[in-house]
Length: 257
Length: 257
DNA sequence: TCAAAAGTGTTCATGGTACACCCATGA
DNA sequence: TCATGGGTGTACCATGAACACTTTTGA
Image (cartoon, rainbow over all chains, first blue to last red; front, side, top):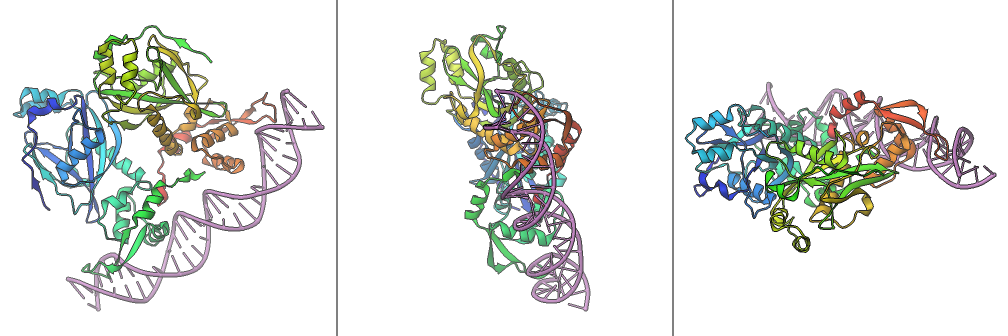
């Protein structure tokens, strides 16, 4: 796995350039080896893992800020982003442990205050093609890497809660947002697509019924190409048909009525 | 319709008590005479209609702020609230027209600055029992009343857009949030429930099939009571069975797989 | 030759949709 | 007595769920 270093980023003392009391936290999901992955960062001075996040410039829309933050972390343009929840409890950045952690670190008191102050976090999730994202560190961020969703380490503040809610949102959006399109590489097998659904929903799905249903949706193009070197019968590759996929997403859902 | 006056509210010059750059805007929905209604306020000094909204105190959670804002406007406790979208464009509070409107008003320049500054709005919708909410004015708010959702007047800033997104969220939540429970009075007829669904979805639903499906869900108790004085055969009244309703909402939705 | 996953169809049960007639009530 | 909506059942169709055997490939 590739990791990039980016040394051209804002130092601590630039926080005053941002809007106060508002942050963005992002759950970046990827899919690799039939596992759902999440991108986490480790703060250099605190030695604690956290969701990638950041703050908003006064002349920048919230969506643009989220995009900027993620570009910095993944080196990707055009990331699929969804805002899923606001985390607005008064003490979420000042829980037992947060203050102690900061005080133990070598961070100046002005920065400590910024990081401990009451902050409303806007929760986004992002879907990226695992094979194209390049986890990128910056001077403040000692590590940035993928974690299996079932093995995330202890996280700062309420970030474990944020991940939980992001997963729930992802489940709810599986049928009406382009989740597969954004998490899979351009060409994929039916089994890879099914594993993605199984991982997100947390249950197994009948192989034949899944294929029938997916093909009937009309959003997949079957390619004249198979995936070889897999140790068994070579499976056919598919890709999403963007035109019909868009049509489907824009269609009404009927809601059963 | 009852309207209450509340004279004990913060004057203009108290804005500095709130967190800057963040506001809450609420789409309060009610249901009356088979029509979906929305509660709007009219600013005294600007003469323009707007969503009820407000700001957040430093020591108050976002949800608590939304609750407080709505209690002030409806005199209701325990309002059903859902955060549905963030409105984060840079110029959303400073669109063509906003500045002119404020300059024409008699509002002091400090207040003008507060109202025109870049503000991220957290969009909530609320569902209330129309018959129990009491639209309440305050010294700054000259009018507060229900509008038919199809007849909302011109609104300040991007509030028309906020309403549009709230409606879409409401449609999406119709099957997995307690929409009917919160919009209808305790006792209601099957037709009233169906009209609510029809209004929100914007389409007609077969009367017999709707009743069958609703009853099969097992969330309705049929009462030994009818609604009289209706000019036709007296319809049976129902009420929601909270226990089975909760069970249903907490259940998985299957997502078709 | 063995292990692992691919490819492929049918049956059954459930749920959705379409549809029409008589009844009770208040004006 | 009339207008309005209430109450009720069936037939057809579409969709979902369950389920097993043969084939291909790489190790």
